[in-house]
Length: 414
Ligand code: PMP
Ligand code: GLN
Image (cartoon, rainbow, N blue to C red; front, top):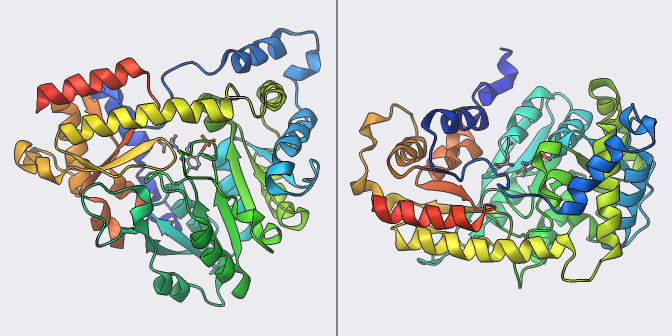
């Protein structure tokens, strides 16, 4: 493999999806996806599109995004961004948020450019930066020293001086992820202002991964960094239909950005992917239209999902606390990062050959307790992996019965 790929040869997703197939744990709280159905209107939309009267809905469509979808994304997001988003020039539909990230990074990062990455980070960022010839510069969120036992994701913070020290004349981009995978942190106005001020001072782009934009728990609020003063023109915002409508298998995402920034993404997209799945795009367009028609109602999926998830979060937090973990309460997203070190004397990790303790723990725990979680060191650069070793990441977008089964399994194991 080319040396520039760095650590990208190893993928936690490939490995843990395989482990799930091998170990067959009774509950899989690893990779983030719902184990329940998407809303009926979403599933029905795809069935209607593929079996409906228009033959062209099963054929290629416009490369940068199916017209009805880019139009409805503009209707959805224009009020949220406080500006008219041009559907034809400021929206790009992609194969999942993954491809939006890929097109943004490959489109903008040149050889030798530096990209600031906040740890823990969604693992593909590092690989994509290296693919582009860029140099990732990492800074870790760290728990406040006085956070105590019942930490929340807001207790994981950036050191302001350290962040500022990473910006220089080579810095091209910072990647922000809010709500944050895996910690569930929802960046506050003042944290975003700090980042925005550094971007403006050093003429840096912000790639804002907001795939969990709807999964935020009261009183926390999702703030789009592109809405901060003078940030629209330097921000690329990424979203995901998979996350928004609980259809991760549809692999449809988008980027929103001003036309001059979008051009670079279009060039990558038109030569790598060209056009995304037409029926899925038309179905997502219809799904957005339906949600807009019930905007403001408690049934709107963008708010009802978060309401359901908050109860699931609380249930899994209790299970983890009752069974010796020290979880961080997430203010958003659908993962819980929990410190497992109080359980170290109950589990023999010496049989697991892995380098990092969280890999050893999650594998042994899956075999013994029959619950699979993700090792967070996968979300750190080699030099900072020690910061993730004491933790495991559990996904809670699961049926109540599977969360109840998790509780039972952990009690039996304990
Ligand atoms: N960004 C983050 C932070 C994620 O957790 C994920 C995982 N779904 C993605 C991007 C990719 O999303 P998609 O499935 O739409 O490609
Ligand atoms: N975003 C999901 C997670 O973090 C899925 C990751 C993936 O499919 N690579 O678990």
